[in-house]
Image (cartoon, rainbow, N blue to C red; front, side, top):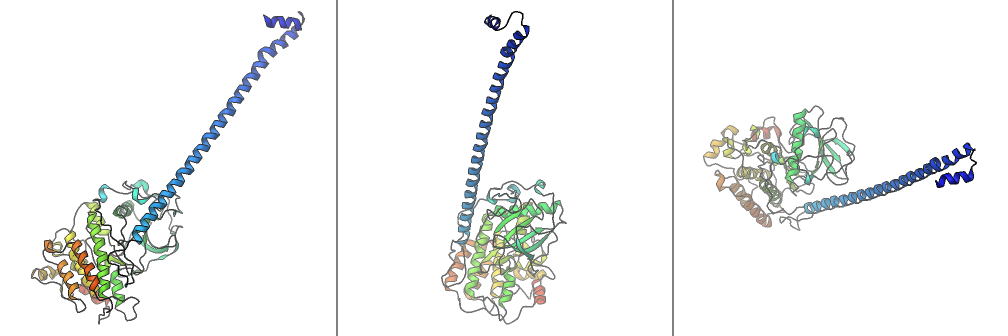
Amino acid sequence: MASTASNNTVCQQSDTICFIREYQLEVIVVPALLISTTVLTLLVICLCMCCRNQERSRARHRHHSSKHRQTHTQRHTQAHHNTHHNTHPLHQPKTHHHTHHRNTRPQPRTRTHNNKHHLHGIDAPPGINPLEHEEVPMTVQNRRPTQAAVPLTSTERPPGGFSQVTALPASFSMKPNDTASLYRGRMDSRDVVLRMLKETADSRETQNFLDFASFLSALGPHPFIPAVLGVVSVQRPLTLVVEELKNRDLLGFLWRCRQENSVHDMTEKRIFIMAGQVATALEYLHSKGYVHGKVAARSILVGSDLTAKLWGLGSAFRRARSSSGGAVEDMELRKWQAPEVLVGRPVSPSSDVWSFGILLYEMVTLGDPPFADIMATDLVQYLQRGNTLKRPPTCSTSLYAVIRSSCHWNPQRRAPLAELIRVLRAGEESANGRTVLRVPEPHNLERYTREAGIGQAFSYAVL
C-alpha cells in the first residue's frame, strides 16, 4: 500500500507509463543490482580462498621436497662414511692400501624369492638422475619387479647420464654374455662399469636382469663387495651401474705381477691382507643366507688401492631364486670345488671354505691352477687317498697351514671363516712385506687352460 501511495503522489492517475516505470525500478532493477552484487562478492571470496589453499599446498610441497632431499643426502653421506672411512683391523700404517672395518652385527636372513626389490631410475648416488628425474632409495624397495616395470620405449644409445662411455675390453676372466653388454663410463665424476641389457633380450631375460639387480640391492653394501651405484629400470637400455675396480680380476692381476716391469708387486703380507678382505666378505655373504659356490681368483676384483672385493655373485643369485643348493654348475670349476660337491652334493658354506683355500694357493703361486698334474676326472680319487695341495716354494709355513686347514677332506673339520679371519689377521702382523714373490715361468694361457681343466671356457669375475 505504501508503494501505491508513493506512486500516486509521483504520478498522475491517468499516467500509465509513469506507473510502469516506477514498478520497473522497484521490482526489477533494484533486486537485480542487489543479486549481482551478492554474486560478485561470493566469487571474490571463493577466488581468495582458492588462492590461499594453492599457496599453502605449494609451501607444503616445497617443505616436503626439501626434507626428502636432506634425508636422502644424510643417508648417502652415512653410507659413504661407513663404506670408505672405517678402518679394517687388517690395516697397517706401513702398508699402502685402503681397507675397511667389517660390520659385525648379525644380519637378517634374506632370500631373493621372498623379498624382491622394485627398482626405478638411477637410485644412487642421490641427486643423479638425468633420465627419469625421480629418486628411489635402494634401501626401501621391497616389492618384486614385474613386467610392468619394463619400459615400452627403447634406444640403442647409452643413457645420456653417463659420460666417456666406451666398451669394456674383453679378457680371459670375463664370461661372454648374449643378453648384456659391458661398458666403462663415468657418472658423477666417478668411474663405473655399465652392464646394459641388449635390445634382443626377451621378457624372461629382462625379468632376470631386474631380479639380479634386486638381489644385489637386498644384499646391501659391504666394504669388500663392489658397490652397486644404481639401476636404470624404466628406460632402455636397462642398465646396472657398478663401481669400477681399476685392476679388474685378481687372476689377471696375479699374472701381471709375474712380469718384470709390473706396476704392483705381490708379497706374503699382501696375500694375508687381501685374503682377510675376501674372507670377511664371504662371511658376510654367508650371514645373509647365501653360498657363493665359485670362490676363485677370477671371482675377486682388485681396486686401485689393491683392496680385494668378492664378486661373481651370479651363481649365488640363481641358487637363491631356485631355492636349491645345487651342485657345481660348470665343469670348468671342478678343481676349485670341494670333494663332496664333486660327487654331487650341494654347495655349502663349508665348500666355500675349501674353495677359499684354493684361492690362497692361486695367490701365492701368482695364478697357477690347483692340482695342475691331476686330471679333473681323477681329482676325487686323488683326494680320497689323502692327498692335498702341495706346498709351493713361495709359500711360508704359516700361510700353508691356513691352506691345509681350509682344504680338509672332512667338511666338519675345515676351519670356520671366523677362525680363518682371526688367523689371517694374526699372520699379517708377522708376514714378510718386503720380499716380492717371483715365479720363474712366465704366464702361458694355453697351458693354464689345459692344467685348470677349463678348455675354452671363461670365468665369472664380471657379474
